[in-house]
Amino acid sequence: MPPDLRVSAAGAFWADEQAALEQAEAAALIARQIKFRPKSVYALSVDRKARHLAGITQISDLLAARLLISYHLEHKRPMMGAFLDALGIAHEDGLIKDESPKTPDAETLDNGVKTLAAAYPKADVARYFWALLWQDSDTWGGLKGRPELALE
Picture: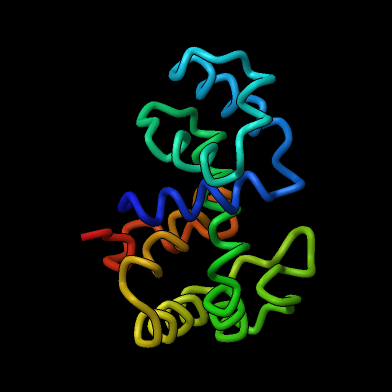
């Protein structure tokens, strides 16, 4: 992710009430980096925590996934909703209603991918598809190998 989007994702992450476990991991990483105690990291402003976290290059897959999820939930809900609409999947503001969504068939997925790729920037679409694959590779496995996953 470009640096400005990393900061944006980190800001959304620190505001995510569902990310307490990952926030503890991030606070420990930041504390180690700036030689603070984790408790002191929590006292920093969200902006400062976001900038510190965005500057860390080595993070766990779990933390990276949560950052992507937080970013999309905060900044990309219309795109998420558009994709789910194109697939005919029930959702509420971009969040799938069904806990175990049905895997879209190849034709439906292809149409949804084309619809999204035509309406949104290529990098945004690629990041969203990578986030879906990370979150649930069984349901979204049909996205693997697609040219829309290319970030360049």
